[in-house]
Structures are given as C-alpha cells and as structure tokens.
Length: 217
Image 1 (cartoon, rainbow, N blue to C red):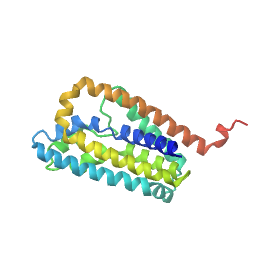
Image 2 (image 1 turned 180 degrees about the horizontal axis):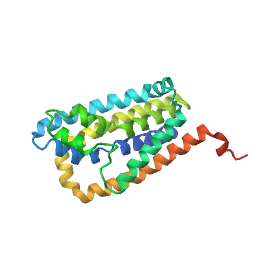
Image 3 (image 1 turned 90 degrees about the vertical axis):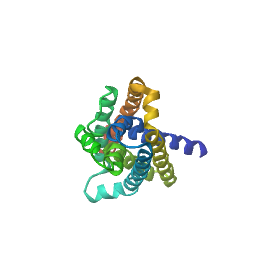
Image 4 (image 1 turned 135 degrees about the vertical axis):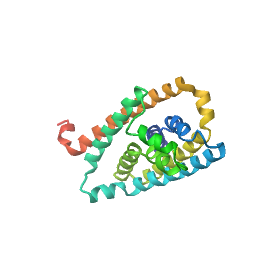
C-alpha cells in the first residue's frame, strides 16, 4: 500500500509540474516585470502561486461535475485534453512559446499592467487550459479507484505552486544560471514527458468511449 501511495504521488507530481512548467514562465515573467523591483516581483510571484493553487484545486475538485452538467463525458474531455497537451508538447520540443499557454499580445498587455499576479501570470500562464485539463483527468481517474488518491493530487498541486513561487521569486537568478541553452534543454525534456502524458490521456479517453477497441477478446 505504501509503495502504491508513493508511486501515485510521484506520477501526480511529475504530471502537474511538467504541465505547469514554472521554468517556462521565467522569460515571460521577466519581460512583464522588467521595470519592477525585486520585492514587487516576489509579491506578485507569491500571489500568482497562491491563485494558481486555488484555481487548479477548484477544477480538480469540481471540474468533472461541471463538465458532466454541460453534457461533456470524461472520455471526450480526456481526448480533448490529450490533443491540447500534445500541441503544447510539440511547441516545447521545438522550443517555441506555445500560444496555448500565452500569446504575444498577452505578454505585451502584461508589460504595461501595474499588477500581473492574477492575469496573465496565475492564469493562463501557470493555471492554463493544459494544467486544468491535467488535474481534472487525474482527479477523475483517482475517484474511479481509491479515494485516497485525491490527496496526492492536491498535494502535487500544492507542491507545484510552492515550487512556482520559488522559481519566479528568483527568476533573474534562474535566468542567469540556466541561460537560453539551459531553458531550451529543460523545455525539450518537459515536452517529451508532456507528449507521453498527452498520448496516455487520449488512449484512456478512446478506451473509455470505445471499450471494444481495447478488448482482447
């Protein structure tokens, strides 16, 4: 039992962290806060991380209910989420900023805003469509098995939010240490992992919708 808890916790943490990918947010954060003091950057990073945790935890807990109320099946949402993550992963493998995460217009608008903590930093940069889809699918899978699996998912969201704060609060140092080459390497590695997660989501969705296709009989 302990081994299963540890294994599922690591899977949940890796999935949530890879999709949120706070390191990919560093260049955007620096571009939008170039005129701000280090203290103000830390304050915005803290508020953004808290907001991202609240948004992702909310969708993790009630997302499936909302989609059912809209007549959207979990199978359809898994496939749609997988397609979205696959598009994002391709952009990451090519080290191109993904429009699914944030657009150039949103970055430009953020650069002239007084406070970017909630929009666009918390959402959509940290808690965007891809990360929301991921936590909803993970939580739906957890509830279809043992309910204790809910706790590791919420813990993974919290750990990712905390990590996001530390990465963004020290964004200048992270950018200086990693440089463009380091960022590109991290982007490609995260993109590869995200592609695998995307394919798994799509396979699970197709299996739920058409169980006969996965039957060995």
